[in-house]
Image (cartoon, rainbow, N blue to C red; front, side, top):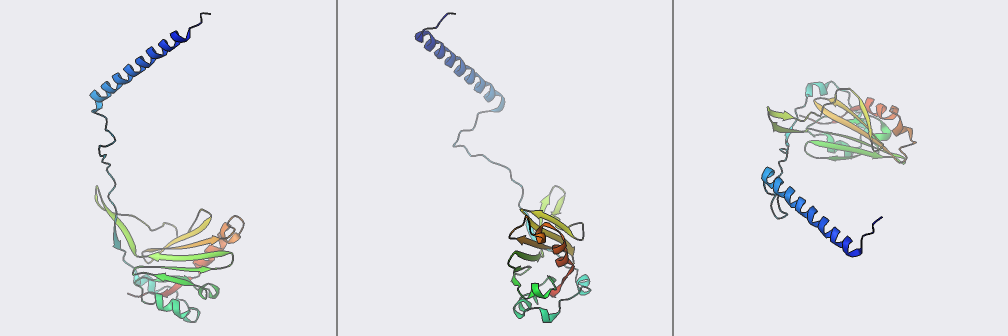
Length: 206
């Protein structure tokens, strides 16, 4: 077999490099003719983004709320009662003594979040009257947050979540366990369903 000398090999490499460069230039010319000049790094690139949604206040079905069960006032700590009494939405909490006596509530004008921490798990209950809408091709589009099922249980990152509609709003219960792989409070639905079934109105007013 014929052996190429180093000089011949270097010359061959140089020719190959020129051919590759020429073909690349030809490709650039063809691309420019077809698509226009390629943007350089200093040229601004405009990307069309979706229109950001705007917020609105969801109407509450107070007639439905008036027919709902209420938390026994004797079970509700005074600090919690004072925070939720005059919120402009029905405040649902599990009417269970061991839950209510440990509960910590955070509120804002149109939402609340109530949490209770146990040794091996945490419970979070929350709801909001804040909805989102955007202007679409056919006008006003509301981002639907109402779930179809009465009680919808899901799990994300091993946190059990139950969502359900009431009074035109959506209420959610989260249960997060210290050992989510083995603690039946998180692996099974029974506990979170028992919390949902115990939900009663603890506050809120027109």
